[in-house]
Amino acid sequence: MRTVGKRCGIAAGLALLFALGGCSDQRRVDGRIDLSLWRHQAGDVEESAGRYAIARFEASQSKWHITPQSLPQGGYTQSIVAASLAGQLPCLMTVDQPMVASFVQAGHLRPLDGLIPAAVVAQLNPAAQGRYQGHLYSVGQFDAGLAIFTRRSALDRIGARIPTLDHPWSLAEFDDILGKLKATGAYKYPLDLATRDPKADWWTYAFTPMLQSFGGDLVDRATMRNADGALNGPAAQRFGTWFQSLFVRGLVDRREPDDRAFVTGRAAMAYTGNWWAPDYRKAAGDDLLILPPPDFGRGTVIGGGSWQWAISSTCAHPNGAAAFLRFLLRPDEIARMADDAGMIPVSEAGAALSTDFRRGGKSRAFFDLMQRFARQRPATPAFSAISNSFFFALQNIADGKDPHDALDDATDAVDQAIADAGSTPAPQPGKVRE
Image (tube, rainbow, N blue to C red; front, side, top):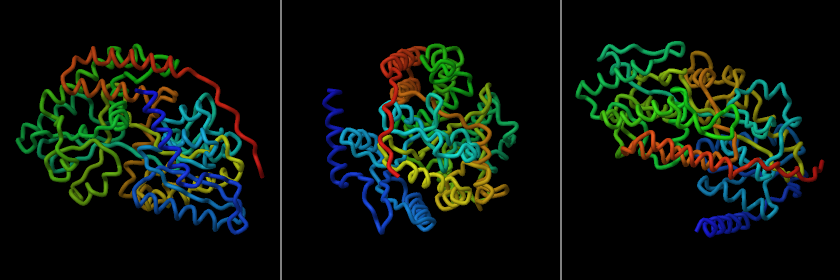
């Protein structure tokens, strides 16, 4: 069944590839060398900002032309696999940062070492750098960040301290605050964790930082070879027990009916990303607070590493592709994307040129959170399997399964996935044309 499903997925990807007409980088457009670009489909605002960036790049020089194509995010990886099998990879592509290692192992990506100046890379936050086995393979122009959203009036009502970057809430404080909010009778479930989301990506992105703040992790980062002791050790068990208690104590709704609990006032707090900030500002106005997640014992952690840019291993003109990436990483371009699409800038220089993320800007809190607390997900070709294992474990824990058993089962699955993934050297990049 798995083989058939995989073949069907690849077949569908090939059908899409041929419908797009292939990805040759040998064409010339108005005398310029054409570079094909694939990206995942994003929101209209982000897509529009991306098109304007391409137009500015083309206006800045006369050698390179970019032909962009947006592909459905749900089948994006399958389309890349299909294009690789057909020898039709685009020259430029987006890649979700946790998938970089898998794409490298499959031979899809070219190292960026030497193509992007070290001085440029040094200005980027570590989370904006997709690295694997000592090499740089992707760079991010923006990132996303998690925070606790609440209303000042809700905290004032129970006399709660407003946390800061230097002094976040502790586990004991957070539990006490949630209990007091519930006791007011104003909120049946005071905290929204978006557990209605059925995707493993969200559960791993949102709750791995909590696991890490307790002292656990998805894998042993020292070796990257196993999860035993990290995903099922004492710290992880404490996290699993606490996570389950949120539902047992009625602090979080396991079956949230929609995504508007905070907007409508059903929940006093929402743990989610910066993409919700515009809606929350409309709902709460000046009463809105954007706060760091709690320190559960080993420091506050939030997830780092969003969709990033990479150059394919078969790109015939990597210098042209790199010129486009260098353009996107200019501070003024980082600032434009930040303000146009509400994305967190990945450099201090970019943030300084931004209206919303500069010091004193309305979204500066997100940049500071990323600077202080962002941690990437593990760089391993087995990440998808790791994510799925963690997702199923947390769902089972939320639904009442013994946390010890659930995390042990997940650890066994992760260790097997890492063993199966291996560490095969990536194929060498294809022939380069100038």
